Structures are given as C-alpha cells and as structure tokens.
Image (cartoon, rainbow, N blue to C red; front, side, top):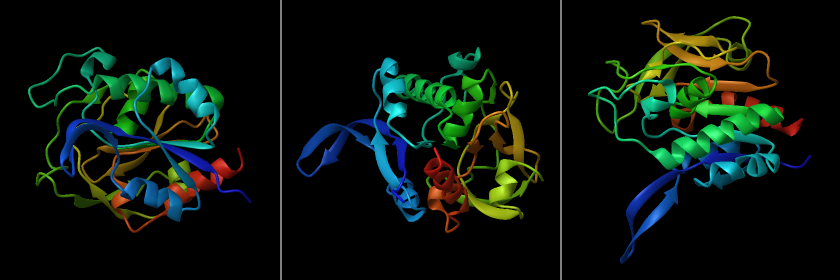
Length: 228
C-alpha cells in the first residue's frame, strides 16, 4: 500500500541565519516530519501561501497536520489582545485557517497540534483563554503532565489510558467551536484534546506529540489517511 501523503504547516521566520546568510525561512522542527514518517506516512511541508490556494493544496493530500507555533491573533475570535498574548503571525493565521476549512470541506483527516488545536477551535467559531499559568513553566523547556481521555471518543480509541504528555503552551480552548467535543482533560480541567464527531477524523491535541515517544495519535491519523 502506498504511504499516505501528510501535509504539515510550517513556521515563517524572518532573518534566519544559514551559514554566512541571513534569510527569511519557512521551517519546521524535525520532530513533526519524523513522527509522520515513523507512523508510516510521507511528510510534505506546507509553508504559508495565499489562503485561496489552500483548497488546491489540501486536494493533493491524504491527511493534514497543523503544527504548533505562535499565539492565534485574538481578532479571529472577536477579542482584543491580552497583556500576555504574543505578537500576531498573520500570514500563518490566514493560511492555516484556510487549510483547516479546506480539510473539513473535503473530509481530509486533520490533526491540530497545540496552536493547531486552538486554530481548529477558532475556525469553528470557538474562543481561547489568552493566558493560563502552569502549562509552560520554564521558557524553552517542555514540561510533562497527565491527560485523561474521555471514554468513547476518537482520541480514547487511539490512546485509551491516562498518559503523561510533553506540553508547552500558555493558551487553551475556552468556548468550544460548533460541533466540537472535548476528548481529553488535564488534572486542572483544561481541555487537552478536542474532536469533531461529525467528521471522519478530526482531532486537536494541546500537547506536542512530535516531542513524545508515543506515536499512537499520529499513527491513527496516518491509518485514517490511508483509507481516504
């Protein structure tokens, strides 16, 4: 069986040093494509592009991963920026929201990771908590905490037991978007995973499986993509 093609959205960073050069770059931590590859998929990077090209890009994919990254600009969920909200990444916001909507329209299996989960919620009309303490305690260092699956959900079908996950975020889902349900929680009640039961395979996780030894979530995505 051919390995399914999984697109992964990328960062867009100005002035990155490449040897003697300093150039703008579309880049992605290696953990993302490596995890897709280890799960049996082919990884394709999707740098920010004009939103009107998202449907064409998604039409060529078997699955989509929306990667982690900077805070979602609050204007997308009808709010002003809080004092702890980071600077906007407008090109990424526009492109990734368009990718998510195209994947939902075409019923392409979709996994949102951290920021990607938050964008999924926003794309369906939900809102975000702009800052919470305790989920990114040391700058630049992933923490770990347990998440408990909600029985009967898509996520619980992939990971049925409580697990400790690598985490680094300061924002979270507030009001759920239309049709979304929570599928995992942290001990403090924070929604750690969301999914769309009306879709074939749509899941968002607040943690970073690309930093984990556990491939089950992405393996589940790749398996769904292989049946597209």
